Image (cartoon, rainbow over all chains, first blue to last red; front, side):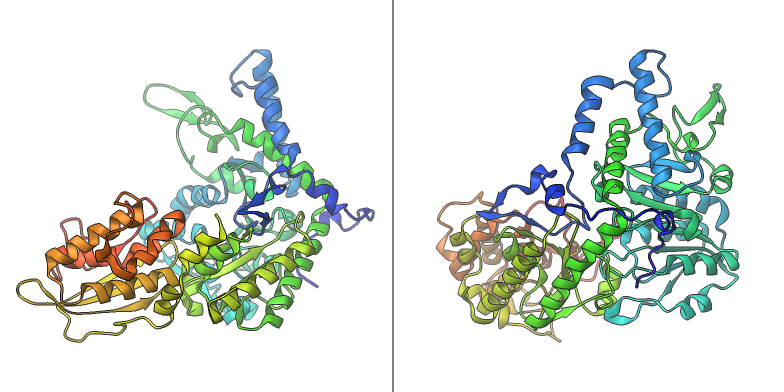
Length: 426
Length: 168
C-alpha cells in the first residue's frame, strides 16, 4: 500500500505478532498520572520514550565500563572503545549501510544535516547552483541550506506540496531537477503531514540527473524499515531519541566516496592522524568527522535502542502506528469541526489538525489537563503552515506502546474541548 | 493542576473577549504601530496607537491572531489604556507584569479591573507569553521612536518574543 522501502526483511520468515501490552510495560515513564489522569503520551514525533533496556544499558556503562575511547590502553578504555564501535556497526546494519565506516555519530538529525551543509556543501556547492527541497521540510532541513546558500551564492528551490494532503507530484520533481540542481534534500516521513514520501523514486530521479541526495529520516528510522542501499541515497541522517534511544545521539550515513572527499567538520582530537605545530593530517572516515570525546554512553544507549526496535520489527511498528493514526483520523473526521492534514488514511503514525472553535495552544493546554500530551504550534515547520494559511496546528503522534484505548481517550478529550469552546462549559 | 485552575484560566469573560475582541481592527490614522509576534507559537498582535502630542493615548486598536489567552489579553488591554497618559499606561504595565509573573502584590491591584481574570496564567508557565505579547508591543510603542531602526538593525516597530525573554 505504501512505498516504504523494506527489502532487508522481504525474505525474512514471518515473525509472531508483537505483544504490544508487554512491550508497553518496558517503559517505566508511561505508568504515571498527569494532572490526576493516566498519562496518554502522544508526542512521539517530538521524542519517544525510553524502555528499561536502554536505561539499563546507560547505567551499566557508567557503572562498569566508563572510560575514554580510542586512546586508552587500559582495560576500561578497551571496553568502552569496543562498545562504541559495536554501536557503530549495529547502526550501519540497522540502515543496511555497506560499511560501519560510512556511519558518523552526530548529536541528532540537525547536526547530521549541518555537517553535510558545512563540509560537502561548502566544498561542492557553488554560486548559481540550486538546492532542491520539499515544502514539507522541517526547519532543521531548511535553515542549514539557507545559511549555506547565503555563504556560497546558491539558491533554494522548493517542490510544492499538494495543499492539505501533503503529497508531492513526481512530475513536479522531474521538472525541477534541472542541471542547475546539485543537491536534493527531503524527509522520508513528514513530521507535520505524516506523508510517506516515495524516497526510492526521488533518489532514482536524482541519480539519473547527477544530483546528490540527503534523506531526513528523523521520523522514519524507528517507524519503518530504512535501507540506504535499496533507497539509493547519498546521505541519510536520523536521531536516536526518536527511536527509543538517548537524546544527543544520531547517525549520519554518507557513501564512503563522498565522505572521503569531504573536508572535516570540527577540529580537535580524534579526527586527526597526526599533528605538528602548524598543520595536521586528517584521520580516516568516519573518525575524521568526530572531533573530541564522543557521546560514548549515548552510542551504547542507541545500540540498545536499535536492538529493541529491531526485535519488534519495523514493519510491525509501522502497521501498528498507522492503525492508530487512521483510528484518530476517522474519529476526528466524524467529530466534525476540524481541518485534518495529511494524505487521508494512507499516512504514517501521526495526525495534525486544527479545530474550528479552538486555537491549537488552547487545545494542547486543555488536553494536557486531562493527561493527554499533544504537540501544538508550527512543529518547526513555519513555511508549510504559512502555505496552508494557518499559524499553528495540534498534532497527535503515535508509537508502538500507544493503544487503541488511548486514541479513544484522545478523541473523547478533543470532543470535550470542542464543547467547552462552543458552549463555555465542559 | 486542578480543574479549578483551568476554570480560572478560561473564565467566561476571557472566552468572550477572545471570541469578540474589543477595539479590533486597523487604524489608518495611527501614529505608531508595533508588530508583535511570538515565533514559538505563531501568535501575532499588531498594536495601533494614536498618541497626542503630550503622549496621551487618544485611540487604540489591534489586529492579529492567536490563542484565546493572547487575544483576550490584547482586547482587555486596549480597553484599559484608552485615553490614558503614557505614565498611567506604564503604571498599568507594571501592575500587569507583577500579576502575571507573580512578583507583584496579591491580590492583584484593583486598577487592573477585568485583567485580573488573567492572573491564573502564572500557573501555566508555557502560556505566560501568550498573555504578555500585546503588553510587549505596548511597551515598545510607548518608548520607541516611530520608524527608526536601532544601531544593530532591530526594528523599533517590531517586537518578537524568544523563549529566553524575560516576562515583560
